[in-house]
Length: 167
Image (cartoon, helix red, strand yellow):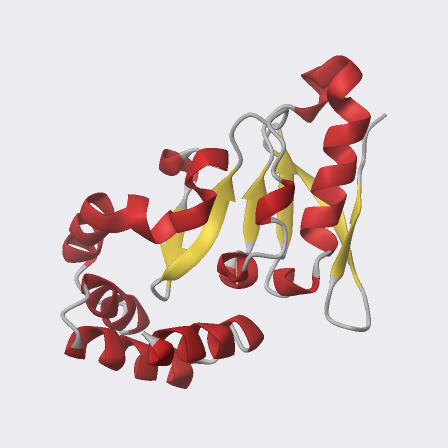
């Protein structure tokens, strides 16, 4: 268990390190954890049918603490890690998942229809900004709203800031 936490912390710091992911995959496979197989298969770009089976069987668990706030069918995995997330109801406060290390590998966040939030627009935008500007979001490249891309500005410390294009 301590080794799991240690490896996950290191992956959160270096989410693009394939060697580290291979070490983690080996560690998981030794324990009989199917996520090790997923990581190995996706790193090798092998057996898409088996990858789909693994995600169908275990994706819910692998989304982990984000599950109440995301649409499971909008989640994608790459290199065995969560890479794409579709947030569910943005009116539900998600402050307690901001900064969670599971976000470290997420490259894309789909927001849904922010413009339809009425009086909730400003508080939701503040939470979204806090989420994507958090340093753990170092892999984030794309944010969409209603399928349209929004701007993200990278900061020198590796974080990012949200620049909405609403007009």
